[in-house]
Length: 171
Image 1 (cartoon, rainbow, N blue to C red):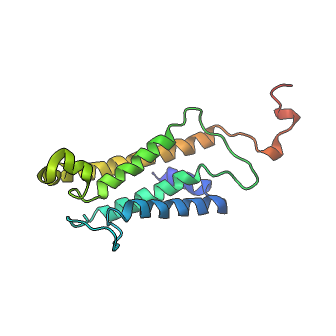
Image 2 (cartoon, rainbow, N blue to C red):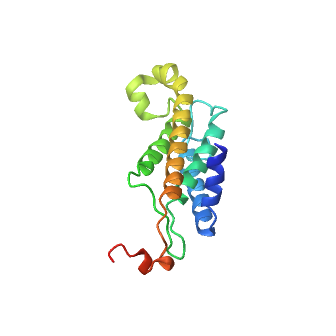
Image 3 (cartoon, rainbow, N blue to C red):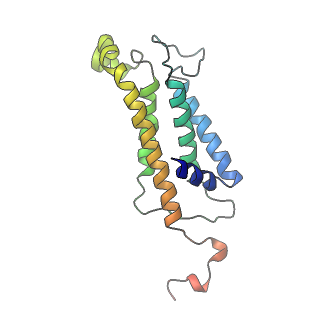
């Protein structure tokens, strides 16, 4: 994961992308953390205490979501490096981030789980699966970020300033 972090740091070189990464990370932490009460608040409540691993999972998911978002931000001068034509990273990144909601949420507060399994089933069957959902969420986001960063390095597109007759495919 070390090379991916180095590539992500290089990718976030501009202030515009760093701001997008921070905004994406904070937004993800709020959208996932507040309703699941991993981030304590007076609006929502939990019947089951927050697990110890929910805090680092929320932090990692938030950071990875912010980095993924930043890879879609165009530079201020309009220059943009391309990505691979088959870019499934946005969909998988979104699914992985949504999966984190189920991973860190209260097992008996989730209406979908309660309808499917009942309160006893939520605690007996769903709660033990939550760490696996967390791993799936983090793994999906790592895959999405790696895909975006690999595509950006492998498929550069010249910026507007460097486009000229030498880059004209027609003629």
